[in-house]
Structure formats: C-alpha cells, structure tokens
Image 1 (spheres, rainbow, N blue to C red):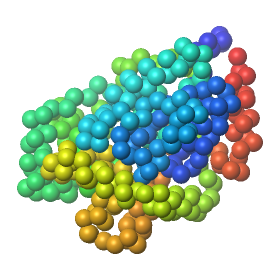
Image 2: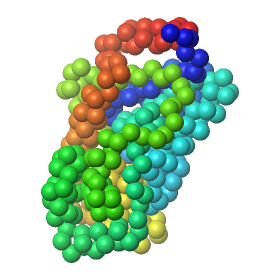
Image 3: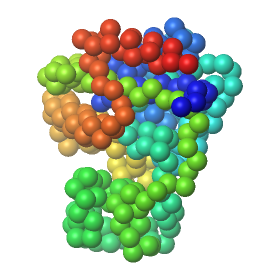
Length: 319
C-alpha cells in the first residue's frame, strides 16, 4: 500500500459539554492548528453565551472558522457548511497548518466527511403549502403523516421540529422517494482530500456528563444568557417573523426555553429544568449518531487523556 500523502486533519467529535472546545484549543496551540467549528448553532451571530461560542480571548489565541456566518433569521444548510468547511480546510492546509474540526453536529460532519445525496432542492411552493397545512392542522399532524410514509425519519425527528418535518415531507412530495431513501443513496460529492483522525470524546460515566451539562447551563444563566435572548427578541427581523421559534437558530437547545420563559410561559426554575433536560436529550441523540461512526475511536476526555495523546502521536507519526 502506498504512502498516504494527503494533508492531515483532526476531527474532535462528541456530545455537548464533553470537553471538545478545550482540547481543540490546546491541540491547536501546540500543533500549529486552526479550528473549524462543526456546530449548527455557532454559525449564527448573536448566539454566543447559550451556544458556548468560543470567547474573544479564545478566538484571539487560535484562528477559528465558520463562526457568525449568518444572522439568526437566515438559513444555512449542511450542504453549504460542507462547501465552506472544505474551503476553510484547504486554506488552513495551504498555510502549512492543521485543520482541527470540533463540534457536535452530526449532519455537518457527515456532509463534510462523506457528502450528501443529490436529493431535491428546496421548493418555495411546496414549502408554502406545507406551512399552510401546518397552520390549519398543526405540525404534529404533519409528523403523523410523515410516519405513514417514512417511519424511520419520523422516529428520528421530534414532532415539534417543524423545519425537519417540512423538509422530509417536501422531499417526498417532490420526488416520490422518502428522505431516508435519498440519504442512503451514494453521494456524488468528491472525496475529502484529507487524512482524518476521528476521535470521539465521551465520558464513560453518563452521570458525569449530566453534571457537566447542568453546571454549564447554570454558568450560562449566571453569565447573562437571558440578556442575550432579550437582545435577540429585540431584533426587528425576529419581531416581524410570524413563528420565530421555528427558525433553526432559535431551536438551539436553551434558546427556545429561554424565549418561552421571557414570554411568561414558566418561571426561572422551570427554565433551568427544561433547559438542562433539553441539553441532555441533545447529548443522547448525539451519542446515538456517534455510535454509527465505526471508524472513530472513543475516549473518556478525563480518564483516557493519555490514550488520546498516544492516538494523536501515532497518527501524526504515521508517515
């Protein structure tokens, strides 16, 4: 087998609050790397505290890419991410540095590393009809409709996730094929031209992960998270939106709950409880996706630190 001459890249994956950001910063500084965010919340401007966006100090210490690409009312797709991330990685490598991919958005990682199938593009007329049906019947009814044609997708998509329900039904109505069938189809995207070390950071003790999630949510609240959401609510574009909580930016964990709290739906204690629960559910979904990444190596970010360093040294020395 010939020598693999592709440039190196490191992928740090894992559930939320597993320590990916800290390790990415440490390794980037030590190795001369730059960080490419693989997080669907961090692409939005104004989502800082609640999305655990790297601080200005952290961004000054290490170059970061794919942060603050869109306003919170603007769309951004996994396909767009893959194009932007490939361009960022190529530029980083051209500077003689190592791209370090860090984040927890599985669809973004999949789009970048494996490509996406050539399913139908968004169709404004079909989306408008679906929105009209949802206004009349409710998204739960459309979710039930999806379950009838694509039970696999319906099991993966929450009954309140309007955007993903809409997209799955849109694809089916446009093509007569389910979104599950499309995703199983081969991708026409050219292979990623990098040799990638795929590492999953996941505490072996799930109770520890839950504690980290709760602690981080409390830190967010203490750090001004509600003021951040108040600033979002004051934006004219969000005030004018008929259903702001249907926007992908505001479906990021914590933001919906904070928005509803500020609407007076429930008190601060309930906000904390709901926010922590939503974040734990997100971590559960992330771990489920990560278990399907058969070529990734799993490490406990605390107990397995020596093994992490060994994996990194072996990868970088395998030339």
